[in-house]
Amino acid sequence: MSESRGLPPSLLDISNFSDGGLKVLVVEDNDSDFELMCYRLKQGGLKYTATRVDRIDELRRCLEHEEWQVVISDHNLPGFGSEEALKIVRDSGLDIPFIIVSGSIGEHVAVEAMRAGADDYLMKDKMARLVPAIERSLRAANERRSLASAEQAQRESERRFAAIAENIPGIIFQMQSGPSMPRPTVPFVSEGVVRLFGVPPRLFLENPHYFFEQFESVDAAALFEMLMEPPRPGVAVTWEGRLKNYGKRLDRWVLMNAVAKPRGNLFVWDGVLLDISDRKEAEERLLNAQTELRLVTTEIEKRREQERGAIAREIHDDMGGSLTKLKADVAWLNKILSPDPAVQEKLDDMLELIEHLLASSQRIAKDLRPGILDYGLIPALEWQMTDFQKRTRIEGTFQCNVDELDLDAEKNTALFRILQEALTNIVKHAQATRVDVELFVSENELSLEIRDNGRGIENTDKLKETSFGLRGMQERVAAFEGWVDVSGSLGSGTTVMVSIPRSNHTGEAEND
Image (cartoon, rainbow, N blue to C red; front, side, top):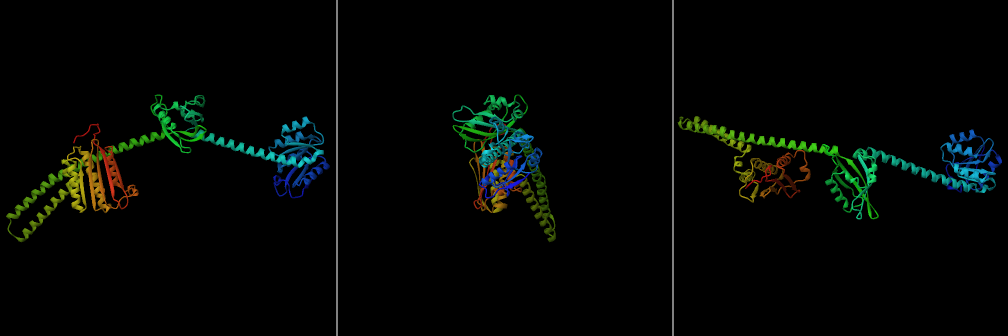
């Protein structure tokens, strides 16, 4: 084994692999031929390091322990030939250019060598072609490596895609639509169709319309209508629908998300179809839980109002009656007892205390349930606004487009309490000087509008965890399938809009 070094600078940028230049492994038993190769490399201006081996074991050892950029082999060596040397290089798994150099090689042998993986061959009497042959082989090797790397990346991408497609709770699909097509087609679906639809992919490939036949007809029609609209490239289209039930107890829901790309006169959609049955079931359970909670809340509020009314009547009838009788008795004592100043003073104090207790009992009874509610909603709201103005010195008006209104007690109480809560919030937070209230009665609904000229409200105020007043309004209205809207801006006041349907839950309209 011997080595030889060429002189810089290299004429081949592709050969600048290391500080020592191109590493060349030469399989040659003749020193003179090896020196001739080195001379040709040096003459070509190639920077290189060349190592010569002439035995099989040396070739294997060099391939195992060092990195080479090119192998040049004589065709006929003692004990083996270029065919065996090429096989050893290829069996090593290394993609190294292999060039055969021979004094005499038949055309048939050269063709077989090229088929076996040799990059080039040349005659020893034409060694001037050595450097161009090395350059061409190195470029070919780089192209092979680039192609192999791209193929490996493609295989890895396909593997990841297959893994993702296999593990998502649904399928990946491609769809085509266009003005010339009566309905979209689906030429590709992933293997997940077996899990989602329970049928093999070939059925979808044999019939491009089979994909849409798996949905309930109403949902499929909605999807067709959506897809027939000219899509906006790059903008995702989302759709939810049900798979055909086939008599099963529970519906199965899917979510489609797809993006269209124009291709000629067609649009090609890449999308996913996900099984969202669990999510839909959870949403239904949540909705049922919310409905049950609302019913419980409504029933609790109803019973609370009943208890308030009962307590208010007890206070008015029992306590109020007792205090009135006591007041009369004290007045009688005041007349018949001796005109002792001390006694008269004590009796006056007792009368004053009884008067205070009477006023307190009336106020408590009124707060629990104003008796004026028994006369209807309109008089109750008018009284509430009048009482509010007296207590707060805030100007205000109440207007209604009808004179009489016949509602059930629950709706009367709900709207009365909503106005009460709104006025309380205005006093606490609004810093308003005027409040206007309007009740508008139409054939199908009641609308209560409460406007103030205070500091206004922000969205963050409505989202506070402590906004129990607003939430209470919403719960009261939700019991009647109505809605509440609170709007306003800083410095421009706040408006509360409340709307509830006039009809009973039985669907019969109430009369004025």
